[in-house]
Image (cartoon, rainbow, N blue to C red):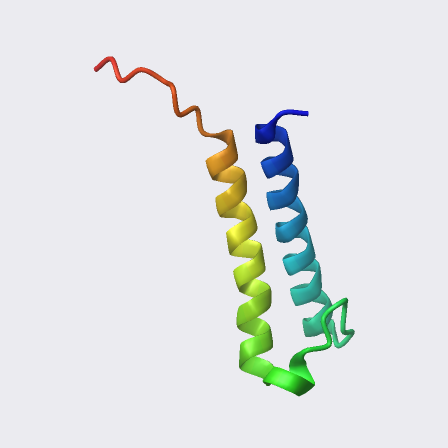
Length: 72
């Protein structure tokens, strides 16, 4: 596996875990992270959204062709 594939998988796992935790907490089920009691509701929400956003950013950066020539 190339580094590009590994980073894409890591980004997808972060995104999927963050979104699943966010949706499940909205429904009322705590998934993986039961941090709401420790850090508070807002911090737990922001952490889950942050995981999803960082996952998307990692996937976008991993799929970017950095050696593309700029012939304009």
